[in-house]
Image 1 (cartoon, helix red, strand yellow):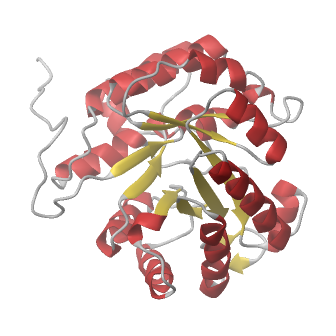
Image 2: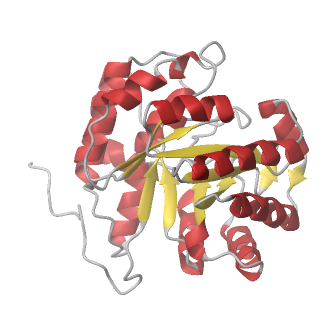
Length: 313
């Protein structure tokens, strides 16, 4: 029996939401960075090219970090310089410090990402510094990038729960977010790093941010799917006004602090949800699934995305 092609690929805006949602694709960076098997620059460029062809316009492609610490990202310059330059498509790279920013600017990246932590435990474990200093360092990079005319996304980790400290104080999230916004970040990315958030928490935190003076346009969200709640959390964020969501093709990536977790929200699952709700993205779901399938076959991966597996079975 021939598989039906009648399911939604792109949709016109529906009654639930007339505005489009921006999907920030993190698979080529956040997804691959956690993989133990190295991926060549040529494979990364080909993967990114297929994602561009699928209609994704905001893609995180590399990290300008020390190659000895993160060998997977040792070819960051080669990847950025080899990417297809398409009008309307923006490539982002993660930079941990001013040295990383200088490398990214030399490679002519379109935008940068920085990261900071709400909690002390995660800052020490992941960045070898205090939470206050992680925000200070990120703010310095944001300010320097802004001076160079390059926009930045500031990832704030552990906004909902910490594996050592447990529940996170919303007031601390608001305060650290405000520091990053004041430094000049185009977006503060509210991140559920270990995937423990639920929809009520998401709505409460976002409402606190709005009360503190944030506009929805200042905020993006990044959810992990550890407990299967990522899509519910996306829906909660959209209801409050957020219009930019992170996801990873095929659900690439994982959280080292949540053993057995599925990691990042899969782009295919997010698209199926959004298109089913009549929310416009201008992204071809099937082409994203095919790009992921190509990559999975190359690397011998099994996709974490239920939608991708169904579409490519």
